[in-house]
Structure formats: C-alpha cells, structure tokens
Length: 224
Length: 224
DNA sequence: AAAGAAAGCCCCGTTTCCGGGGCTTTTTAT
DNA sequence: ATAAAAAGCCCCGGAAACGGGGCTTTCTTT
Image 1 (cartoon, helix red, strand yellow):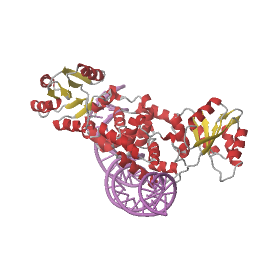
Image 2 (image 1 turned 90 degrees about the horizontal axis):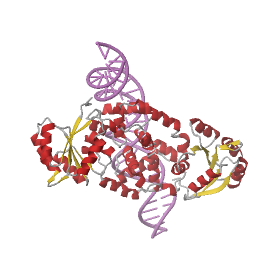
Image 3 (image 1 turned 90 degrees about the vertical axis):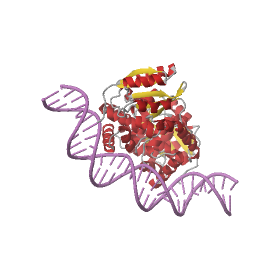
Image 4 (image 1 turned 180 degrees about the horizontal axis):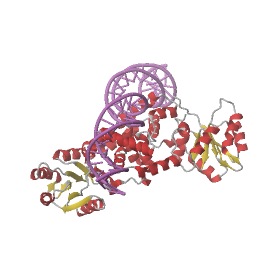
C-alpha cells in the first residue's frame, strides 16, 4: 500500500489573479492538501521550489513574457534527482499537441482550464491518467461527435442498449438476433467512433449524451 | 433482419384521463406509431382488440372495479393463437412482485408510471428487456445505495476510474499497483453492490451519480 | 499489544469481449 | 433494374474480464 498521509505541499504559478483564486478555492477545502505559495512569474517559482520542495507544482502555460513549459527543465536542473514533484501545466487551450509538448517538457500532465473542479481534483489525484492515458481532448470528442453521422439506425439502437449496461448476449436476446450480429455491430461502432471497449463508450456517452444526436425516439423502424 | 415498417397499431386502456393524455402525448409524435383506440374499461378493450388486432396493448394495472392483470388471459382466449401482441401493464407502484405477477399473467412487460417518456419508448421498443432482463427496480437500487456504505476509500477511488472508462490494466498503472489488486477490488465492489460487470456499474453509476455519497473530493488519502 | 480492517498480491478456470477476416440476405435509393 | 447500404451471420485467435479461492503486509483502533 503506497498511501501517503502527509500534507501535499502545493505551489501555484500563474499571473492571472482570477485563476489563482479559482484554483485556491478548489484546493483549499480538500483534506490533505496544503497550498504553500502562490507566485506570478518563473523566477519566483524557481526560488520558491528551492525553498519549499513542494509535492505538486501547477504552472500556467502562458505566463507574461515567458512560457510555462520552459520552466520545467530549469526546475529539474536546479533540484536533486531524487526530488520528483508532480508538475502540471494549466492551459486554456487544450489539444493533443499541447499535451505532448507538456509531456516532452517533463510535465506530469496537462490540465485544461475548462474542466470542472471535480475533474481538476481527479487530474491531480491520478497524475498517471493525465499523462500517458486517454485525455478526452476536444479533438477526440469531435471525431466521435462527427462519427455519429456515420452510424446506422441499428447501430444507434445497440448503443442505447450498451449504455444500459447489457452484455452482447442479452442484447442479442432482446433483439432476437445472433450474438455474432451484435458483436459485428459493436465492432463497427467502435471503428467509426474510435473506441476500444464498451466501458469507454459508456463513459463517453454519459459525458456527452446531452449533446448527441442519438435520441432515436422519433424513429421506430427497428421495432421487433 | 426482422425490421418491420408497418405502423404499429396501439390500444391504450386506462380509466384516468390524465394518464391517457400523457401516454398519447408521448406516443403521438413517434414516427411509425399509431394510436388506434383509447378505452376506459376491460369490456371495451376486449371488443376493440377483436376489431383492430393491435400490435401493442397498454393496460393500467388498477382499473375501476377490475384488475388489469386479469384481462390478459381473456385476451389470449378470445384471439387466435397466431396473434401475439405485446401487452404491457402500466402501474404507479412498481416492485419485483408486480413484475412477476404481470409476467405470469402473460404480459410482455411491466412499465412504471414514474419513468420518463424516453424510458417509456425504450420499454416498448425493446419488450424483451422489460420482461426477462434487468429492471432497475427500486429495491435493487436501494441495495446498491446502501451497499455504498460498505465500500472502502480505495474501492471508491477505483469506481471513479472505472466510470471514466479505463481498463483494469490502466487503472493498475495509474495507481502503481498490480492488475491483480485492481481486479480484487473490482470483485469486492461487484459483490457488495451486486453487479456482474463493469458496464452494469457504469450504467448504474451515471443514472444515480447525483445521489451517491461517492464524491471523494474531500479525501486525499490515497494520493500516490 | 492484539485484533480487525483495509490494501495488496497471486493462481485458476471460464466466459465475454475485441479485432480481424469473410459471407449472404434484405432494404433502400438511383 | 441495379448498385449500394444496411442488417445479419459465422469463425478464429488473443486479450480482458469475471468469480472463486487463498494469502501477506500495512494501517487503525481498542
């Protein structure tokens, strides 16, 4: 068990007071979390890190007159090798390029300003998720949204049943078709919408369902 | 392919004008759907069925002076054996007993009045789901809600990651623990909350998340 | 200090899922 | 009438998930 009970010392570096306030407001009530310092430029950040050795460092991508990414190598230089804080880039514009740039600079992850407080906590709590794994980037979401246009009615029906938590076998029973057919449909759905599993589909569906042109209630063609 | 393009003839039997209006309002705009007749008692229903041979029959469970269930055997008696309409019992009070009683009476399914219009369409569209398969009954939901109290913090964390669509492998990477451990946690979660798969958990979670005491944002113990 | 809970780890057998392919029949549109 | 699209079916191999067990280490609590 690698549970860690000590307070997580955190430093925030951003030159927008409003953002600083927002981040602080989110983090302050969290048990086990301690905001150590707030700085507004790179020089102050480096100095603060030397002084406090925080566990979490949040850096805005677009500081005045300097770029957040470039600070990361400097941090690594000026600190002992056995000191490995979790460094996150905070950005208002988020895409795959931004993410890869952050990671190549040595950041632990890249966090969009457009996420909710809850997601923000999640992102810091599980840094590995943010870095190496699926980031629901706007681009990926757009691919899936437009991919819906490629879906047939039957495929949309099956998505409805998948999102109700049913297995391929049960869906097949429900529709009076072969399990093979259901799995063929699932394969086609995954191919069109770039999913790798039913759970990915579920998670995405519920995160986006209010914006999806999927509500097939006006179409009763596939009644059986 | 057993797609059926002909209009689905429907008869509704209920003695509450408000309910009749509500059901009609939901069904009327649906393409491929035709409300044939509306009746307010069993005798009229039997007569209407003889006349129109509808595809879908909706019967209120609590008609004035008669019981909806009892009409079903009479319908079966008075119609040829090759005529198999989908008969649904509509009820305001819904539990496992109600469902089994409806099914034993010969109904295709049992529909609660407390569901949304969207769910109503789904229920009629996929009759098999309603009958033989998981009905999210209030009892089942209550088991799961109270089961949450039995979950440990680590299990709640893992639920968060599951509901983001991640595989056991990725969750393990994210938490720096063995895949075996993740699957042990999943097994314990499923046992405590009576699930059979991750997709079931996902579907349930998103249907109930606003009421669940799961938001672990005030707890940072398991930071890694 | 001892007991119990929580977390972590492992093996096994079975089922389901995923991805790749190929194929026929029905429906729809030109 | 014909072509294209949609729906349905099947096989295979590998990966993942599921359910059952057992077992150790690390907290936490009394």
